[in-house]
Image (cartoon, rainbow, N blue to C red; front, top):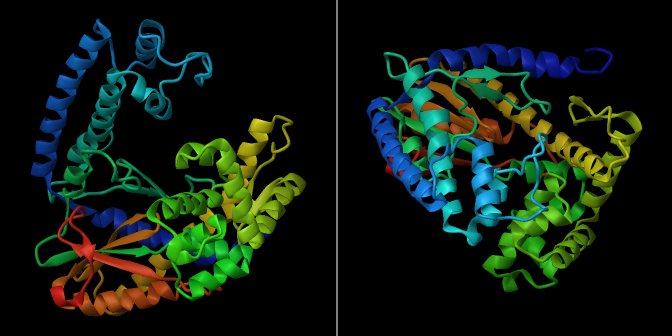
Length: 423
């Protein structure tokens, strides 16, 4: 710990967090079991129907959950895909979701398979484990893991509540099963564009920092830079492409990935990235320094000293080396983000405890990446929100403002932007 200069991370972040995670695990979150049982029946009926339709379309019965059997139907029997389809380590053609989505326009069976998989995943990953693990007080207790990720992000298991889906057709039903107890409200406090604000801070890019200081629309500004147009001339599609690029930059996204995600041709994607770095040169310099650092030292540290090793970063294989560079670029941002969330958990816990609200009146029940979810009594709601927001927006001194957005509701699905007039 001392050799790697990690004492501050250890003593100021990780150790104080233990008490808080233990409390969150012990408290759990209120669950509507009847709603989950109803959802389980609905998914079961739908997946049975989809299984029949898929097997009829394939002309034979097979195990939809077997990648080998599914691969045979798609690639051998129906002759979908081509020789360039990505293969697994075992040499079989991959039936991963991204592959199937590319094949979806070629045959109606693929959309049915994707819908089946979605239902199967929601049921097996969330619905059944949640029904099994919810206690006789109708509260669900997840296990939080401090050492489960390379970047310092928290993870959870039994069940995993860090990835409660939003895109699935079943997501609304699932999210509505997470409840506020009687006379209390769920309060979600979410950091606004946290990763991009951290990128502005660590890269020192003047234009990016100024945009956040002036509270500009960062995606519109990026589009303006890249398309060489005034901000008022930027349309919704241009802004969407710029938003994809802004978040892609954090993850070291190259032209090929950006082309695929944005829908732009490869040539246009390459030009877009070039224009982006010309508009925000500080980001380009920072990324180049990270690449050089990982090749020179074999590790990357974040602003607080947290370290991730990349000892095999010089493999000589371009595809392998690119993956190392991508992960190295992402590490200082994602781990810095994790540190801020952990500090926020520590500080809000302290505030609630000092006020005498902890346990009965207010508690932190869940953390989902940039968001903290509280359960707060209605009689202290306004005061508690004001205190928590002030604390979270001043948790770490950055070159740009830290801002949070607050949503409230009686269940996770029906959360609305907080307004005092509703309470």
